[in-house]
Length: 493
Image (cartoon, rainbow, N blue to C red; front, side, top):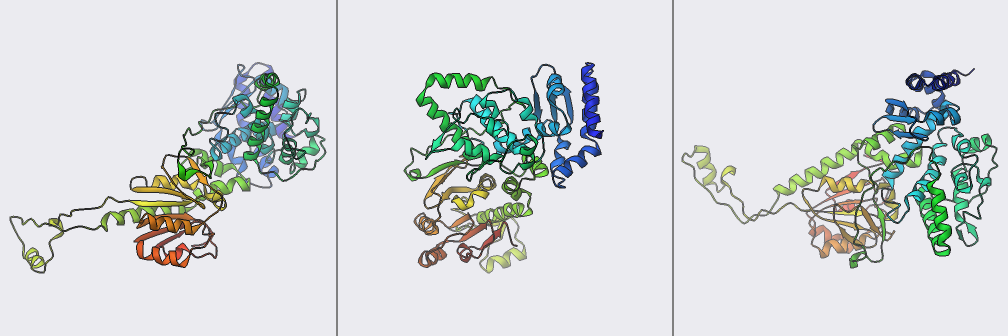
């Protein structure tokens, strides 16, 4: 018999004997075993990152007062219902699935902290997130726990599984140009899960291109609003159904950032799209855990920049510019106070017209003010989470903060929103700098646009110091010709 399955059976034997402490101890030992690490490493094509999630579990409790499972990876605790474990969990992959389920919740809440907004009913939000996460977690571990747990459910529960053909897609339908976009999105979630689909005897289905979590949550909300317009009673019935669906893992509130936006009241913000900035910072324990445990390429690329020493170099560079800015300032003159004793060296300096430094009193000293320009065009989406980090680095000396695409929008450092038209115009930025008489600035961009030569010459005369943080290496050369310092974040030195 498989050693891991033998360990699972011992755990269940202890639970049947009502010895929950012994069962928890056996489960901890199983999770720490070499067999489990080897199993998971093999299941994840030799990756050692994914099994690292086991290091974030320090306590397991079998709790009869909860219906299924509750996981808090930040505290290192896992609570499991004994009945749920006995009835539904058949192998170590099911335990691993619930750990990934919670980790994926953390990932999505970090990347899209305010995606659902206040208009999203809580029961609908939890259901929509779990639909996506149940599919996402099975990319790393082959567990059929959702299919077994929801085997007798209705269509709303079937969507939480990979049983695509068991769903009544006339009941769950949001059509555009004759296509049910919810059906297509669900099919796309499992398009690459061939091993899982074979295990549950589900035939692969055709699907159109699909853009992930953000699009899925948008589609579900639009479907809900359409139902609200069509039949309010049906919507109330559906709300009750959603509220009664038991989650495999208890849903936690991860504290989405609550912010207000005045986009509609500011004329500079008319005609722009508003997006939430991902809630990511380099010292965040969740970010560190994700980098240690996540192998999904499209997820890792959103977090990996904070694993790079160049981020610290950027902070040092900004600090250097700020420090220099406080010293290189215009002054109207100085006064000299002669002390009681004057050394020969002091007298010599005074005869040459230079006052000792400690005697100089400067007037009209300018307060340091470095203007920040951040590219928020579509090509910069990978780097959006870097923006709050830059905000924080210059908070004590920041003059103004501007976001730019084909429009320049002034923002406050506390705003967690991006205001973008999607495109990029460096000429618009140059014109804005000229009009605002900007002399000291930090500009963050990928450089994927052109700069008019006349505007470039005008700025060269005006700018005293420009730091250009170029997020990726490419052949475009524009702000490099104006910058005194260029920091390349990716792809070069």
